[in-house]
Image 1: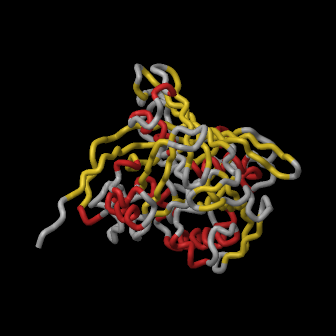
Image 2: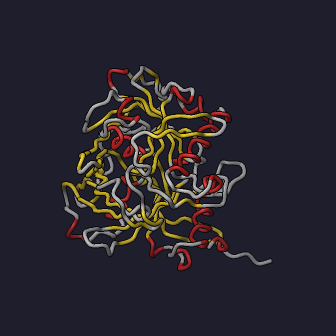
Image 3: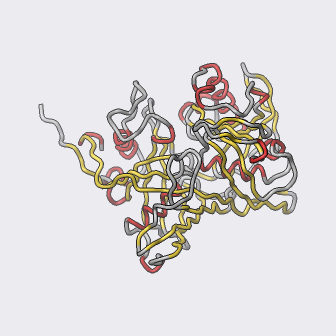
Length: 399
């Protein structure tokens, strides 16, 4: 029996923030995968090594966590005022689907460096030394991200002394501005709703088997459901194993996520939640407290404004998703949300929160105009680095 030889596809394996993913230029993909659909999804699943019933992704580039089961497709942008179009795919580990419903804020930090290094940015837009400003169209959610990428001797500077909790080694800082993170836009997944889809800063959510809880349902950066840690039997100081080793806890958070998604009109019925794992996120918040981060680092209550723990793809995240950090910063800036109340209430332009790996600061500019809250941008720093570049190989029947 004859078997098709493996395909060689130009690709780059990159770290962005606390995530890793396989990056492609759109025109390098096989023709059938250059457009959305089954062929593209099948190819990316095979690249990452999914679906894997063993949950290890041994036969692919994934590393068996939601933070490392990701793919990015980039192309020159034809949209006025933008340099590059960025499409993100969250690849399920054990199920045969790719979720295109949201952005990855962490990998957003790697988009500018990849685009510069792979000829997707006009040379006149890139200084030899200094800071390159890359305007990114985030195609999943129809939003603009502005990346400030350091340049040295005509190349992206990747090394530096910027430290990010959740990443072992320092690197160069990449500043990200998420413009109008809650604005209604038309993206590849359709129109996005208002910042508060229900019209309330705090909703009462009835979840069968869990109970009735207060929740802040927000669409900023990525749709996110915030609940109080105490209401779900947590303290806000939990590390990964405390949640991920507890099937009952995971089931509880998935139930909250599904019913929150329904209330946010992201799904039409509860059964659709299982096929939309990337969004919305669910997170629990609490006032500041001392705790020991996963690295052994001591986090003092006096150094943070609140505690946040968030789940991604059904598991507690080891640090914090970048897009969820945008949601945290936005919600913290708006008096009356559960995030804002956990941080002590009042108006604020920035917040520093504690997560399982340490702390993170994110800023947001919020204004109350004509009875509605508006956020012009959210800002945070990340870092990015090329880990490997060349070709990724996949069996010929994968595309």
